[in-house]
Length: 533
Image 1 (cartoon, helix red, strand yellow):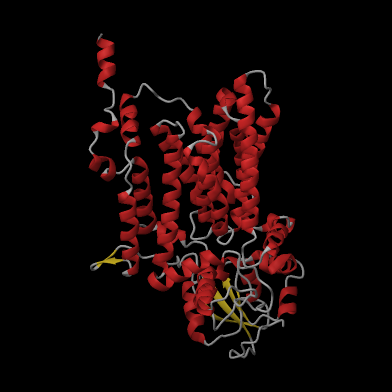
Image 2 (cartoon, rainbow, N blue to C red):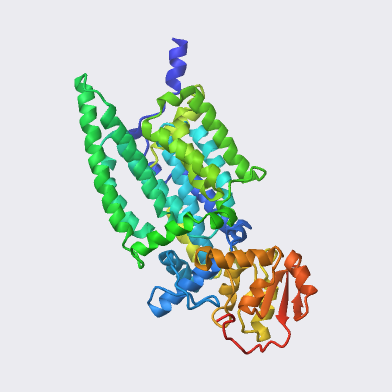
């Protein structure tokens, strides 16, 4: 009797005992994760980290150019190769950040990025709990995934691919677990519609087809291997066949939707040639395998070890689709650092329900039960709108400045570009590719760049010459002989900088702790012709 009384005292009140206002106004645990992450990303120095990749600079300027010309570019206008064809496949994202920057400055760009990242990890936590993960375990796993993903907490369109991938997983997994007659089944037909947007914001739309293919293969396997020895088996085989046909239809519509982009099938051919180019894949940092000496990579390693341990003990409980997803997540995360965020999210959602539920933690049980009854998301909605208003007001609330998104002058050549802005140098400027986007943001249109981080645009032959020059390898000056560069903006300490200092024909114009500007002696600074044409 004593044990029974104590058990009943831990029982959570039924949902009807909670007032309606409580269920709609009380923030859930997922809401709190959203609020905490949004606040950290926009109101702390993390806002500067979000702008740590200079590539956002050309995204902003491209979006503003599209808005001004009402045309999606087919040819480059930012570099000295402006006559060359260019696939601006992230044009829809560019429009969004271009307009936000025009309205709110860089605070608006940071706001969009922070909202997407906060949504991704709040939703990851919520889905983990819904799929049967203990509340505290879901929180720990989500924090691990979040920490692992900080390696790519950057204002770039790839964060939208995280959101789309999570949405596709939710739709496909819900119908896989609950059957085609379940409520989420209708959302399957939202996948082709979402592909219309995804294909125009980021090349990661290919991930959607990988997820769809995994669930299609799992259904096909179940359909072909189920033996009709019992009535229940026959019904399962029929349901699996129906799912194969439905996923096939959804897949064909999604493929058709992916061709609705400014470049049609040529975009697919371009992305294929880019991702299969071994030279580019071997020399672009984000396509390299993770270096587990970093904190973010170690968090991913912890998730991998947890996944291995759980699968060793309880791996037989996985459905075929979950097994394939685990294999894909592990392979993708180990193959390229850029895949770590999506791989971490998938691992959290799949292995979480297999971990011990900690049923002995009565407080955790009660907290989880209460959290599951909370239906309102008014606080995240209010916070999102409030932060946007603050960004539009110059980051200020009254006389207090709460948002100050800017490029880090310790990472970007801020002062050197200030000098170039007022120096009258108009010829294209050669800087490291990882600075090129910042130069486009600051100096375009009067001044073009020689290179930036659009590696698919510049191509293998150009990049081979560029890397030979940067690393001062034999015949390093071949790049200069071919392209007749007139102005250099180089890191203050670097092999190329050291050599240029000793090379006749170059004169330093400006120097600070981050960068140094060289011009070729005898350069006509009013000559804005593109060198090498």
